[in-house]
View 1 (cartoon, rainbow, N blue to C red):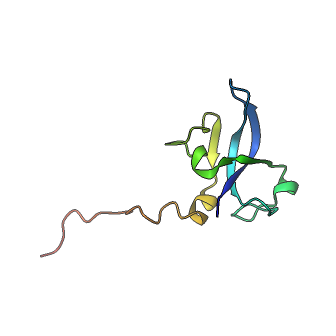
View 2: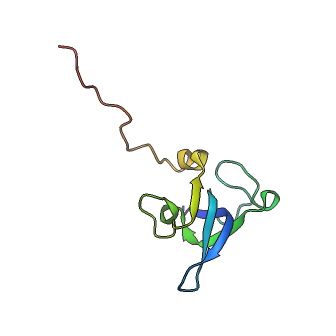
Length: 94
């Protein structure tokens, strides 16, 4: 299952490709809603079927130049924190 991007805005990069900007959401092609449940058409989101969800992450994505925010509910739906350990025990009991 390849997750693509729906965004509130778009811009054209220097190479001439349309890329997402503003707030981005995860979207499955063939559906009319994001993974967090927002209807794409009613919310006025633009679909980017050529941009994968991993490419708009601000830390590592190549298409994240003008991304203002990433939907935290879509991050959770894609399993973003599944492999990360959220806490560490600094002083374990004997």
